[in-house]
Length: 124
Image 1: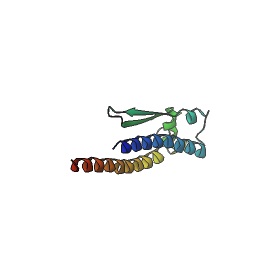
Image 2: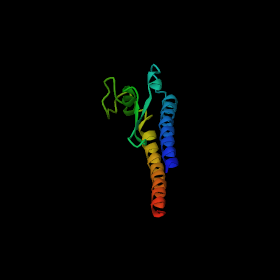
Image 3: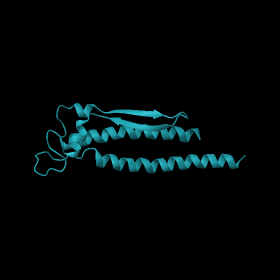
Image 4: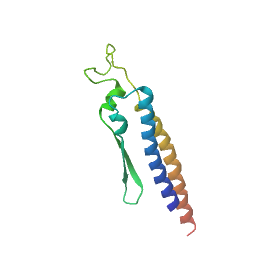
């Protein structure tokens, strides 16, 4: 069971790091660069539960990045078709797709851990 725990935490850490890489690549490819501060503002926090598993992953970055993602800011309201600001979807699509992939992997990892627990219990 300890191997499954290490694999889960390793996977979560790699996933969190990969999300930043994906977002940075999207920012560059979509031209979402003002001063470059958004590109370098990403921070990941992995919150560890009492049992040693990662229980929560938090990504933070400059708030104006979400405004660019939604196509708002600098006086341009959400949904205003007459604005010169165009939505640059660097965050939402990549994030929700990656969360789906992470969820599928979590199901696999927890399923394997559950199998170890059941197998160990049945051998007693």
